[in-house]
Length: 445
Image (tube, rainbow, N blue to C red; front, side, top):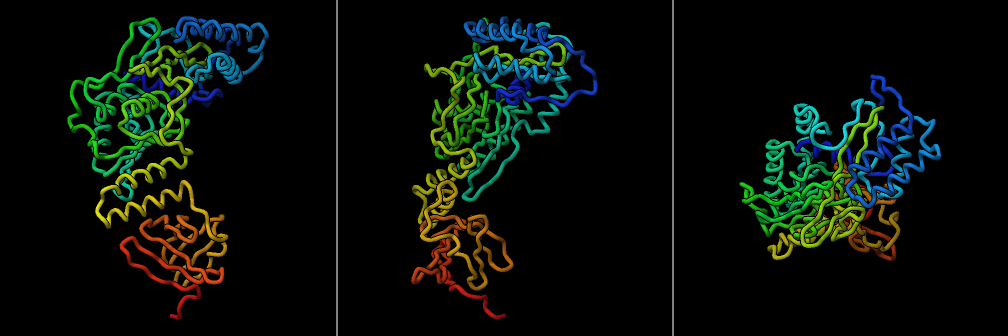
C-alpha cells in the first residue's frame, strides 16, 4: 500500500499545469526524440487513462503536436512542459502530466501489476515517512486549550503510520476543541484517510468507492470497530483548514467532513484533484503521471475532480486559522461559566480582528505616543504596544477606539479622547481590573 503515498506525493508536485523539474542526475541520460517520448505517452494514455471517453481527445492533441513539430528540437524540460500543457488543454486533469526526471528508470513500465510500477525500496520509504513523522509535522496547544495538528500528507506505511496518527488524535482529544490543518496537504493514501475518519464516522460505514481502469470497484470503509482509544467526543468541536493546495486524499477527507458533518471546513476550495494516479517511467528520464482511477462518494455525492471541496466557512487561506479559532472560542463560550465566558469572548474578538479588523475612529498616527512607561508606535500602518523593558504586541482593532493585544488577548486597550485628541488609555483585563494611563512622558525615576 505504501506506493500510494509515493504516487500522491508526486501528484502534489504536479498539481499545477507547469511541470516541476528536478535537478539533473550525475548519471547521463541518453536523449530521445520528442516524437518518440510523446508516442510512449500516447500509448500509456490510451491503455490506462481513467475516463475512456476522454482518451481520444488527449491522443488527438498529442498527435497534432507531433504533426506540427511542436515537440521537435527542444530540451527535455521544455518537452515535458509542452506535453503537460497540451494534455491539460483537453483533460483539465491535475494528475495528468509529464515530468523530466533523469533519476527515473531507463525503461518504461506500463500499468500496475506484474512488470508495472510498484513500490520502491520499502526501508528507504519507511525511513522517509518516519523522518516526516508520517505527515504529522506539528502539534500545538493554543490559548483556551484549542489543539492544532498540522498534517501535511496522508502518509501510510502500516502500523507505524497508525501509531503516529493515534498519538496525534489522542493529543487532539485532550483539547477543548481541535483544528486539523490540511492547507499544505497534497494527499496520500486512502488507508490514512480511513484511519483518521474512523475516529469520527461510525464503524462499517462506506467512505468511498474506487473505480480503477476496467477492474471491479473497490471500497474503503471504516473498520468493524471503533479505534481502541475511542470515538471523538461529540461535544468537542473540530475545524479542518483547507486551501487550493489541499489535494487528492486530503480532498477525500475533506469530502467526508462535508458529507458526514463531523467538523467544519474553513478556508478555501480544495484543488479538485480527485483521480487516482500512477507514476510510470518513460525512457529518456521522463515520468508520466497518469490518472487510472476515480473515486465515488456515497449517497450520490459524486467526486471532487475539477471542482474541489468547498469550505463551509470561506476565508482567504492566510486567515483560516484565525477564523477557526474565532469560531472555536465562540462555540466554547456557549454555556461556559461567567469568567470563562468572558475569556472566550475576548479571545474570539482578538481572532475576529485578525480576519476583519474594526474601523478606527481616527487615523492610526493619532494613537501613537508615550503613555507613562508604555509606548504605542506605528509600524507598517499597524499599531504596536510595548511596556518599557517588555515585549512588543500588535494592537488588534476590535472597536472604534478599542484594541486587543495580540500577545495577550485577555488584555484590551481603550483609548480616551478629548477635543478630538487622544489623551490617554484604559488598560482593561478580562477579570474586570483596569489601569488608567494618561498620555505623557515616563515618570521620573
